[in-house]
Length: 575
Image (tube, rainbow, N blue to C red; front, side, top):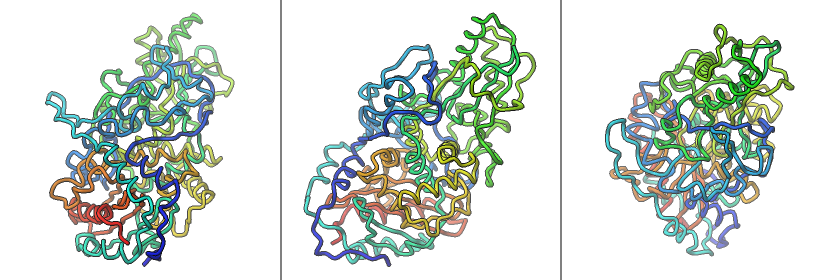
């Protein structure tokens, strides 16, 4: 069992605890300062709303998703519920004063949108527009379930400012019955104080276990530590090596969309100005205008995939949960860009499909592409004149989205950006190395940690529960405000993302709905949950619960048992 602390300690904790708890429910976010890592030049324009949610996330395979972390409508009631992230949840610095120009972002029409955080009414971040579950096309949308009022929740944070840490004995007594549930199979766990990361109680807390999608916590923290949060991923078109040739350069943005703005959904609802992904059509319009200005109406098109290295196919590739990981794709490589399935069918050649779609859009603008687009023989020259470019949402928003919806494709893209920032190859192996190196630099204990990807789909990944709670405490620390999107990106119990249909009536954990934020993980026979919770004394705690059961165990039953463990932390001070 993990060591605890004595009941004699009665200090309320550091400012990190108070601020972290307030941030947990109010959705205040701090982002990194100016500058952009991926593409530092000013945007020429182009963004539109992005693809729908449900982009091939958790679950061991396509057939398992009925019981996966999104199972039975787990997209919830609008991924960030009724403004849970407040007005512009990445604060005044979200677009920074860096290379993208004084906090402004180019629009699809070439106009500039001010980065006024108050302009983004309701939630932003990964899940997009404000609350309300999305119904299938042609059916009425159900009434949105309101997210908990911030004032009511924050009242518990302010209560008992002298409250001490939970004790090991108090936590043992509070959790004993929930931990004895046989549905959990083999269970390991850890509970820590978010203010300082001190381990309070655990069982097998140092034993490596399969993390599934809680791997995304490690990926996100490393990326936000290595790269400014206001960085955007840029897709460009440049002049080729010979006259009449143009090159479409992949910048690693899987959210680039081919959909018209009015057809795009994120979290089931239209995207706002801050979450709207870049538009392939806007890129085609810019390119066509530049070509026509030069008197060119016929071109040869190739595409540059040199940003990434290594094998693009994940070890557990199934053409559903994740596509081939390449730096050029549209709508995350989905065969149907409007699909909201948890594991939608993916195209066999995401880059080729993106290039073909771009050629068709050029044709609509009066530019003929001679022959079919092909991969470029060499990387585009760094000095090649730019004909058009479009930019993704900020890295902070991408992290927010990938955590809320447990987006495998986006997680792998962000992992590769971390690899590039760490001067590692942008491959599965390079990304894993970069994440481990950066977490080590941040002081995270890495004994027993094994990473093979950025999404958690790899079954050979291993992370002990004690490491997961340390990662969360790091994100809550007032020493690392740039990591805050990791907390705000966590799904809200009973309301958003992969927790939208958990902690519900009949689960035995309904009292914790709206009060727990946690990242889920799901593979066959593996379920994990790691997040934050405010206890009865108003202290912010981090927790990780990791289970392994027979492959045919009912996943919903296992998850309900896990949720009951976490719910017990809500109801006690555990002294």
